[in-house]
Image (cartoon, rainbow, N blue to C red; front, side, top):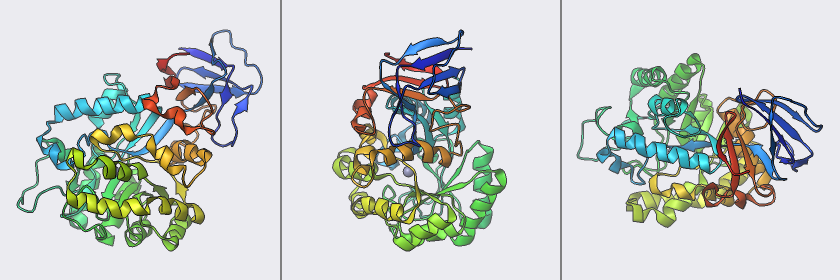
Length: 410
Ligand SMILES: [Zn+2]
């Protein structure tokens, strides 16, 4: 079993507002064994001189889609699953190299992709999957055109991985059970209109309350939870009252609904970068006029939703949600958030809060005894300058995932 003793470093503990000098960290196998402000002695460990760099926990992105490889999701109907998996593997590796050692896929990636990473066939972060997100007929996850009445079979194209349709309590129950059977770590449902879908009004309230409650009940009894795509206050309110644990996007929330979220302990996972990216670059990658018009509405409200959620005391995670060719804008999520939050808060969202969201608090998102050895060595102080993560991770000197080097330029 490999052992490493990290010294000559500044430790970024997301629970503290400043870096900590004089710390040492001992890693044994995939686990952090000891974190100390005094010299650690270990004869067996290889000493790693960090050269005064910052050692910090790997980042977590709580809203990504590894296999939504097209900005115009409908184009996935022409992508075979083999090509989709290959493209997904590239996205996984690139996100890892940007410093994200854990991803929560909120729709698309299946257990095969997760297994390929776990087995070392693809290089990628830890992945928590939702399987196929569940939508009502005509909802945010129904990508048929108006002239098409049959639903694609679940084996023929990439589009089928993007979502599945269920209507009424029995179908929703069956769909949730089916995704759990296929290895979903959490369930994703669509409870409001969206940008990428063509036919649903943004403000539409999708799924009846009894359908949402049925999804929550199934997920809860399995020992997991439901994440819901939602924009408007009413859509968020219905979901949270029905027991949904994480609200994805939430751009249009208001103060009363944010108060309800805080009271119920629901998490908000804003994905501000995706709207900024779609506005600037969506059209060149085939995003329709209908999508761009809806995008404008949620883009305007994005930063305000952070202010409202912060003021109410909602736990705010960090997501990106970038599709296909827009993914290289990933780190702009940090830049945009700095307009409403401190760098410390941004890092906390991407570490401690997101670790709670994937239900691995104490094991992910911080360098702590008993936690996974998922760590980054960065040049500079992220609390002073979040651009240390820019340029697709080229300024990250080293990345360790589960106690193994993914990159080491130390
Ligand atoms: Zn998404």
